[in-house]
Length: 201
Length: 283
Image 1 (cartoon, rainbow over the protein chains, first blue to last red):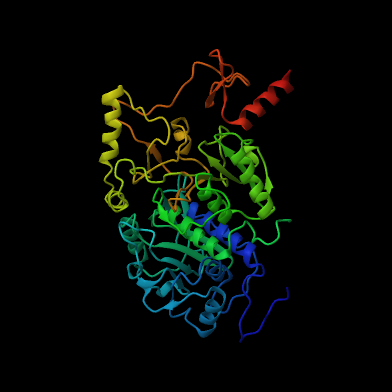
Image 2 (cartoon, helix red, strand yellow):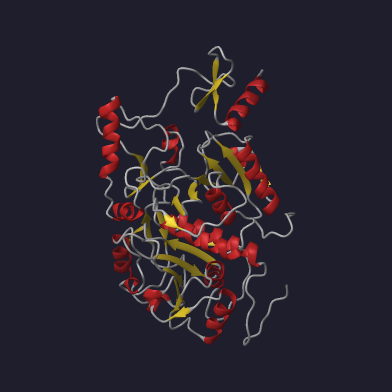
């Protein structure tokens, strides 16, 4: 397939929607099952700015008409909204607490995690999954991770986040089994911080 | 890749797969919690692994190698037909060797060969709710899970001790996952429970009729419930496997005649067969 370089107009999604969705899902599953592990995007994708390939791929693989999506100010461009509406068919919502997925294109000015839906005690799965695009997954401030999926300990050096981010994540972990789950994306790499993971800064 | 025409890759449609995939991701994020999902009708009856097969269909990709076991055996009807189902609808490779598989769908056993990082074990689950026989109302069991109120299960195990002098539950033995959720490990013998604890493999559970998916991530604490004075213990046999001589595997009792003759053989056919091959090669 020849790459499309149009700056206006709709950009293509997955070249093979069936197998590419499966590959990206497995990458997210691997990242979620082993928090802190960096997983490389297994395909090529050219999403509209300001989305990175990994960020867009997660949305294409997991979002559809059943998942209301919230976009942060940076992601909420016409091109991104059109791209996601066309390829995923997902409704866009303005209330972060009503979203099944939240796409955050600029982590440094992201809203607090408490702004999103944390699920209920009876149904903790009905919580928002945040897909956060970060500047780096390797050159940020290193964090020690522990919890399910981690044998001894793992390290992740993602950044940059707002100064209060460690406090938000600790409060989110404290809520367990309620809480939001974070998928971090940068360039072609993915990592995940599910609510079960404890972070030490 | 060749697969049956007229069907999507791995049978299920893409929207169904996405819905199941989202449920799996939430299940992994909340170890032991049962995520409700929109279970589909599958071309096999409930009780034959409709939950496991939907989880496998959502997870499996063109590069995967699938192993399917039924009570440890690769060559029983259920295992053969599910393996063939995916060979035909997804065109994927299948195997009987535990270590060669990337995905192992299982009915009621965990292979004897230790699992490795990167492998996914998919359990077929008949009844996902560990408290169901103690409290039939879903609204109540949901509240009990929300409050981590599992006293009733300890009472049940205590009643076993009061009646029989020991915990008489031998399969589907309740476990506590990551110190939080009470979970039914599906009807695996309690012999297999210790293999779930800190397993390097990802464990996914699918219940088709009951429409639940749950998971145990790799390296997660899975504790079988017990009491300080009645610690959890697994079955042991006086016999070794009559075919391969293994003393460390789960043995099935096979009646051989109508005069009380019987033999004990490994339930894991791959493990038993490979041990015999190695013994023959050594001779």
